[in-house]
Length: 260
Image (cartoon, rainbow, N blue to C red):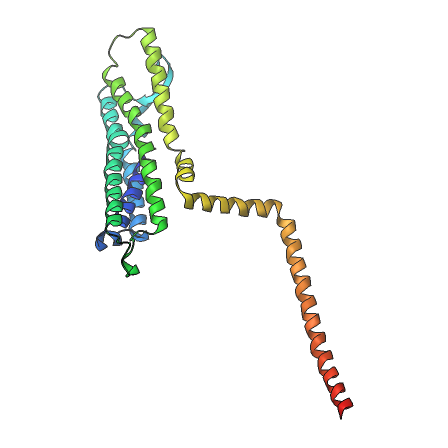
C-alpha cells in the first residue's frame, strides 16, 4: 500500500512537469526518468520496511489475534514511521503536486488567445494530457480521504494503549479500526473505477479492449466466415476481370474484321 501512494506522487510530479510552461521541466517528463524513479522508489521502500520481518509478532489482544509491531518503543517508532511514509507525507505531497498541476493548467488556459492566427502557440496540453491530469487529481482526492483516517487511528491507538477502557469503548474502537483499515485497503483497488469514471480516454480504451476480447471469444467464427466470403468475392472479381480482358479484345477484333 505504501508503494501505491508513492507511485501516485510520481505520477503527479510527471503531470506537473508536463503541464509546466518551462521547457526544462517539461523535458523531465520522459520514460527514462520514470523507470529510474520507479526502481529507486521500490528499492527505498523495501529497505525501509525490511524491519517488519524481524520486529512484527502475533499477539493476542481483546479483539483477537493480531500481527503487529512489538509493544514498547518500537511500536511508537513504527506508528510514526508508518504515519510519515503512508498516511501523512504522501497525502500532503499529493495535495501540493495536485494544486501545482491545477495552477499550471489554469495558466495555460489564460495564455491562450482564441483570436490569434498563429495556431502553433495554442494550448500546450494535449487532450490526453488533460485527461490524465483530471484522473490524477480525482485519485489524489480519494487517496487523501481514504488513507488519512488510518493514520489518525494508529496514533490514537498508540498513545492510548495504556489507558483503562471498558468493553464498550474497546468494541467501538475495534469497529473504527476495521472501518479505517477497510478504507485504506479500498484505496489500493479503486484506481480502475476512478479512471473509468473520470477519464473519457481511459473509458474508450477499456471499451475497445472489451470489444476485442468479446469479438475474439464470441465472434471468431463469424470473423473466419467474413474473411472466407471476402476471399471468395475477390476470386470472383479476378475471374470476371480475366474474362473481360479475354472476350472484349476478341469482340473488337471480330467487329474490325466484319467492317473490313
